[in-house]
Image 1: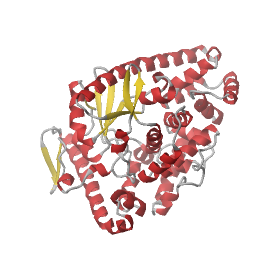
Image 2: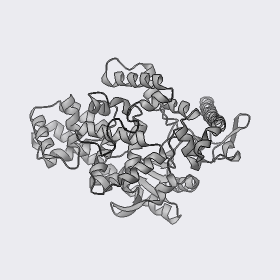
Image 3: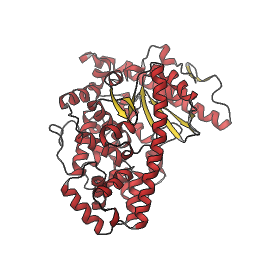
Image 4: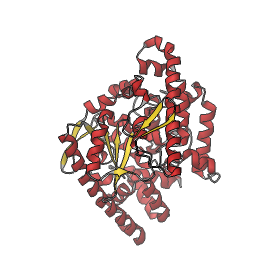
Length: 456
């Protein structure tokens, strides 16, 4: 299986080196388990690149007829779905521009245009737009006018606006989904990302028939690494394993690793000094290092200079230092066992690593809440810009963190209780705990207390 895992990654590349091409030809002639390979490609969103790679190497004729027909049908579906999404994107972009709302297209079609040379080679299942948080009401109204509404079973917009990183919407008449982001990870992480800077540095890139704003090359790499680790929080712990490629595919992280790979191979020159500077300022050095090393392992290629093994907390050292090492290692081991099939995933594993669709949160990431309560000094200096005096702010930060976590839990439980009782969640003001008000339109007690979200 190791060979198949590696071949799948190599075949999905936009440019296939000659040595890889020979290995792929030998693999195809060896008669792999095509149904299993296609299932793995589908769940990792690598089908388009896989099909395109076989076509470029003139190997489609060597694929069994049933598997070839399945691949062609998958690719046709991707083309049709992408056309629908591109039409939606053009309409949304025009209306946001008309209202002078700054935005950037992240991932999906932006990557297809910038990295893959073809929007159909980077499948996606929703549109991701980064906006300013203050523009959310207007952007939400624009989407609503186009027929977008909340996903069935999701918590109200007010919950996400206060406690999350995006609002997820759907337009059932066209079977499309939209995510309006004001952040790229939840507010309880130790990242200090400059979202205003991301929007100020956007570049216009032709996407299908329109020039649309996308992230610049350096910001693109940083945010792609962040997204990969967001979905694979134990990636750094996998780097010591021999089956990294298999683990990534079984965790369904394939397309996000490929994104980082294509970003590194893009014709756009990357300013590595700038990447290091922003990674340090945003608390992403360990994240970027883990992702670059994962790419190096899977593709047997050297990591960029200065980002090799043993640098910038590429292993689990961070977890060890902050006192959560034991918990972190146990969770990592539990996920490894589940991914490898060493034992059937029990209820605990399914709960911890599964995504709660109502709150869009993986319970395993609750470990971030503990780190946020008592963060390392480096985070305190970055967040509060207070230098050595930042340590004096620990009591204030801990009180704020506790309040935020408690408010989040109170809102979540309150809405779940209302849903269980069949009460309309959209009807006005709900008070669950004295001093805490959850209002669907987005007013919150933190704002009255002077806490600002733009520091995240």
